[in-house]
Amino acid sequence: MPRDLRPPVDILHYEIVQEQASALGRMGRALEQALAQLREFDAAHAETPASLQQARRKLVMAAGQALWMFVVQREATGLRDSRHIMRTYNVPAEVQLCMGLAPPTDTARHRS
Image 1 (spheres, rainbow, N blue to C red):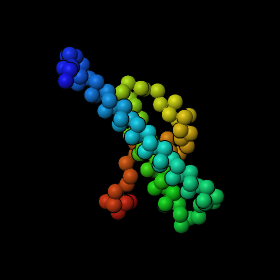
Image 2 (image 1 turned 180 degrees about the vertical axis):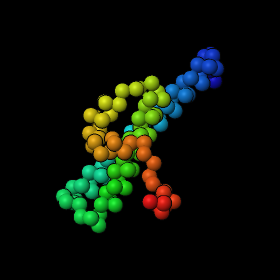
Image 3 (image 1 turned 120 degrees about the vertical axis):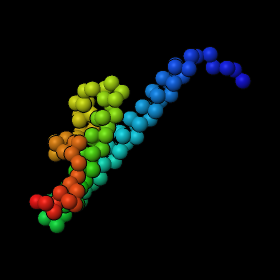
């Protein structure tokens, strides 16, 4: 069995880069899935009745959260320009606007 002659720091760096790439892929797939769910909802409901507004809002918020996670992961790897993501994934403006927002908690709703 050949012995790896690379210094341990190089091996560790390689493992870290592999995990970053894997996490970036997972976050990208999660964003794709969230956007697909939102688009499917919109395609099924040309005009969203008031009874379905909350369901659609949850999909928008979920897509915003997935977008936020993807952007943060990209920035952690040194990729700072998010414009490419917005174009490539065709992210709606309403999803971009709620990126990083935490969903309201039950206690926040009761205070209003």
